[in-house]
Length: 54
Image 1 (tube, one colour):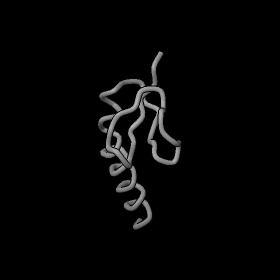
Image 2 (spheres, helix red, strand yellow):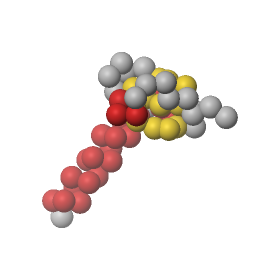
Image 3 (cartoon, helix red, strand yellow):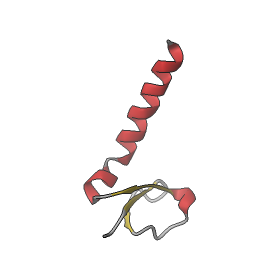
Image 4 (cartoon, helix red, strand yellow):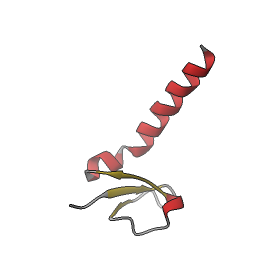
């Protein structure tokens, strides 16, 4: 089964991690999940920032 990765430098989805791991977010089970990687990162960061404020 393929894994999908989001490349933060090229902003492209990669199947089975073709780039250096320092450029990748993932793995994700589907291409669609990988396409929304930055949204997930932002949501997690916002949640952590909110926890820090409390």
